[in-house]
Length: 506
Image 1 (cartoon, rainbow, N blue to C red):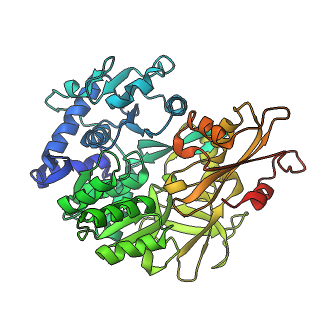
Image 2: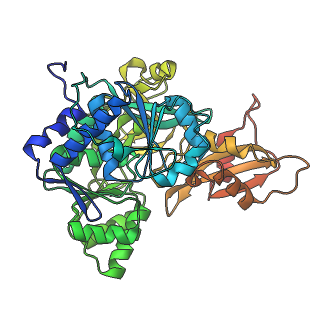
Image 3: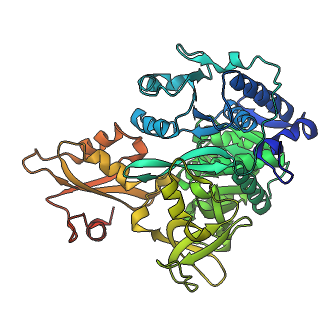
């Protein structure tokens, strides 16, 4: 039985089977689905998964491009109390295996094009009891065939603190942690996004970012909650994006500056009208692209600061309100900036960002010690160093050394993960990986490596391609240099700050 004050993703969505039953909720290609069809479909899938033995707390992994079916899976899991593990389809098999072993899902749902990549994992992931395909794939159960039910399902008790998603995030010794986002997190995120960005029933949101990413979930779920329309693009294509904005009169989307620049280029080349755009969310590394967007469409580009662990933005504002900043404290978040002893710093002084409120994630999956550490003192310690001016705007400075992170185009890349792969190359003795400024993507990956004595002179391009064969290609170094040896601290470890000081340029 639900608690008196409880409200979850399931409750919000199910309202629309009555209030907005005939209104269009999703568009993909030439197909449309109403809110009523969506709720009926997610009920059918939930009942089908329950018949397979999937229960509250069980994990269901998803490896898929953007699709209506992806939204149905999110909704069905919410009805069952199952926990979705959205997987990055750019990942290599070994990366997926690590995440699957961390989360031990009982169920895997995949698109046919990923079946071959998963084939090698099936023997090693015996904990996955059911392998489902969204199409017709040999060796997989058919998701569509399972959904031929009447959609009757027992009402599963859910609370806001119940886990809803496990999203891979910050690496520990080269392995990701799983940030558990709760039903309450999704509702709070939806409320904040709706309130600040003016999302409503007239909103048409274009899913250009992948649905495994919290950025796209933040906007897509908020639009769903508000009774707006989600237009789905399977994977990013600048021409299709520009054409789709005109065709569907898209008012809101989220993207990164290089993608946005390519959309503007295609619109100008092909004559597509982007004038329906009102809000675009993303990263603000390219002021000239944001100014170009505003000149062409009048749309506001919203920037913000956040993490997977805070389910997206905790600060936000339109770019032109405070160019270069990450905005001010959002409706559903409280922030503090502190020194290394958790003492508040003065305005304008750099300090670690601490966050409290209903956007903060529930835990790291099966990592109590790490969870307790980041939640010490009743605040989530982000590991990010920022400064806050006297008007409350947040300005990013850097990551703390122990939580160093590179964000090319908004994707999280952890140096330890890339270094671990580099050290597998027969010519590499030591490696130090860090981020450097990049005009196209905001930040790029650079590796400084020491080669093994006696080994043939290594070819940097061959080494970067070696990395790309073992982890997702967006994680390979854009820049790589070899040196005789890396500088060391007194304890024998690599002096990362000295390496960055000597090689910190692209």
